[in-house]
Amino acid sequence: MAESASTKQPVRDVRLIGIPMDLGAGRRGVDMGPSAIRYAGIDAKIRALGHSFSDAGDVTVPIPEVRAPGSGPKYLREIVRVCQRLAYRVERILDEGACPLVVGGDHSIAVGTITGIAASLRKRGEKPGLIWVDAHADMNTPDTSPSGNVHGMPLSVVLGMGAPELVGLGGFAPKLDPRNVALLGIRDLDPAERDIVRQSGIRAFTMRDVDELGMSRVMREAIALANDGTAGFHLSFDLDGLDPEIAPGVGTPVRGGIGFREAHLLMEMVSDSGRMLSLEATELNPILDTKNRTAELVVDLIGSAFGKRIL
Image 1: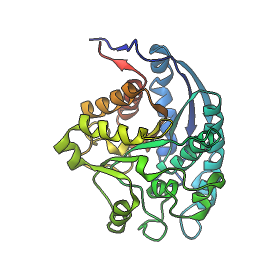
Image 2: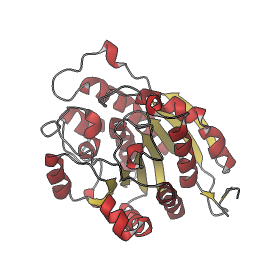
Image 3: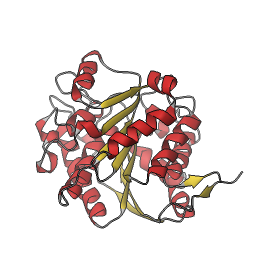
Image 4: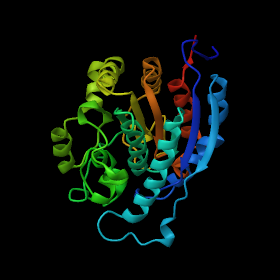
């Protein structure tokens, strides 16, 4: 049956920003993610749902081959600069009443995205919530990270923990109240990272929670806390949150993830809430994909978040 846009969905001004960055990851390839998503037809998908769409192009990112990783978190200086550029662009889009659609790139880009969102809302005395979908918690710090890769640290950064250069991005910290943060789909954490998650004050839903409670209940709870006293929420979706059976094109796959219908239900409930401020999709690695299969799934999921319906 053909899918259609819901008549309840307001028309949105969606503006795509690509972040071809893999400086925060442990392997190459996710820098090609934005191109793969464009090739899979994201523009046509959004427009078919009745929204306006414009592509703001890519944020400039240096490649690892011309930079030294440095000591401490790898490529920290370069990642800070990219996130500064991204934060400014996201802030401006929100200030203009539009919806940022950020596609990466590794998950370290979330520091820039969330900084821009929080900066825009601070001008109005408001704050954002966050729903973070991921196989990993991304809550290591430089002291706990086994690898030094920044894509394992961004959630702790926006909560005020980690490298000062990233924590202080935008001139304020933290970017989020942990009581308004839901972490969903986790199933692979580093030992020291577990303690950080437990002590952080966020609500973490493991894949066992999804299995026992069902995606519908998990998302009702996640949306409720992300909306509690906020202007709305940002959805940051690491594609390794999906099961690798349906999404093979990711750099750090973990078995037992979110399935096809669970993922669409998640996005449909985001859409139904009417409270999504912005959306981010990260960690798509076309080198590891099969005929752009994962990118095509991502485009379909983004469509569900913007109002795609069966009837």
